[in-house]
Length: 151
Image (cartoon, rainbow, N blue to C red; front, top):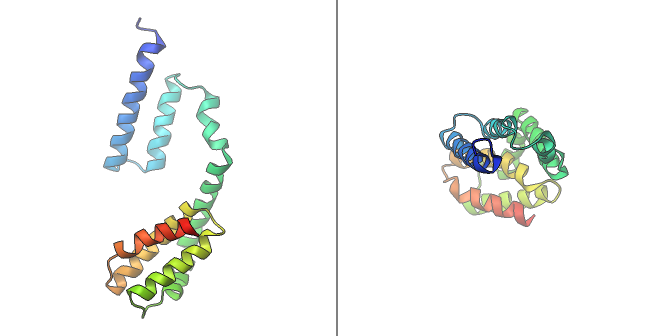
């Protein structure tokens, strides 16, 4: 009974998920590293084979979002997005006009790109812009998410 996979595989996976959750909540590693470590743990235990372990990476949707995150990171590091956001949001606008400009920008961008990278790019920019203007960032972040969905 000790070697029977039907007995220990579910418990091992459950423990791995609990450890993964703990790592994500505590911030011990970045989410991608924690998830990859959990995948390697389950793979090395022989619960999943190599084909199953890499099958998620062959999904075109996952690859497209991954590539867009790389592009977003490059744009964010180049400060191009910050300059464009200052022009798009304006530094002398009120809450309503800034919100209208943000939603219009999100509609336009999300029509051509996947929503997740758009939100990932605009969230820190919107947060910083709102703080420098003395506005609450939460006033802008929920409309940011919804306007990318509607775009």
